[in-house]
Length: 391
Image 1 (cartoon, rainbow, N blue to C red):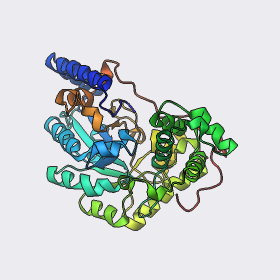
Image 2: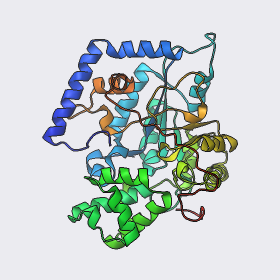
Image 3: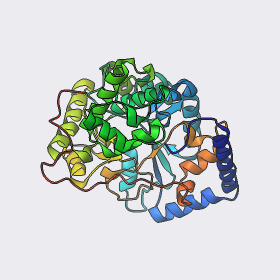
Image 4: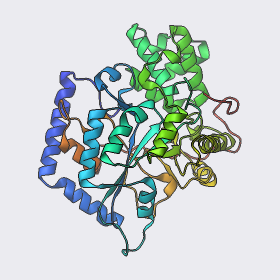
């Protein structure tokens, strides 16, 4: 997580200092300077793509149950989108790609634009975010892992976080989880201070099949089931996804099983990419045009596989500027959650402005994490056996 979700005195003070600095930077014109320099460097309008995950009606309650950095309350979502709309034109992903392709000054858009996206396909996007998007008349793209839609299954990161949180609640360190020897050694190698930090390491270091095995072993050890996870982690039904599309929201691909594609053989990656495309086309009535890499990880061959499957773009989680004539299969996105715009205790327009305009990154206060990995040798596979039929 980029910032803690609690309201301890230490973190309140840190956020207060951040808000004060953001206010001073805004007053000094820093955000306008960054914006001007970036426009000149990019040759025109800036294209900001936001990545949301899980809208919730009560952030405080949900943050005690699921990974906080996935969450945004509907109140904060509304304020973020309203502030964004005052300063940029919010456009569809198709329009943003067109802006980025424009080479000449003739017809080039000079006002900055923004795109709203949601990853994974949580039911809260349909139930809570859609009414706000409709009210504010904001287009959006929702990237879904097709194998989870319309099923009771939960995403691996939610299952793992629930297990790690339960260990902590019981006073058990990850190193003492009591898993089978091989799985316990994997857990030991990733153990950190806190469930969120341990989860980050597990996702970064283990294959999809290893993650699945650890999640299942934790659930068995703790007497848990993925269906017992908090309701907020539910994924959408196909009827809800069709409802989003009928409301004008674009549906994009996010693989079948939310697999980190850089960690699998290219044959399995293609099956994940094409299987997702085909299932969405079958269930929604049209093939998805846009794709997002799970966990933001990709390789040159994965980019080619996405393009070969007929997608027009693919999005990363690299928080840097989108460049004119850049590769549409490495679109850059800013991941945003509840605390991305939080001052000491409440929403801060100054923090929001500096974060959304890239001031904090320009000053070196935020570090972008690169998602590109080298291609795997032909046939090499971190995973176990093939794709399977679902989560």
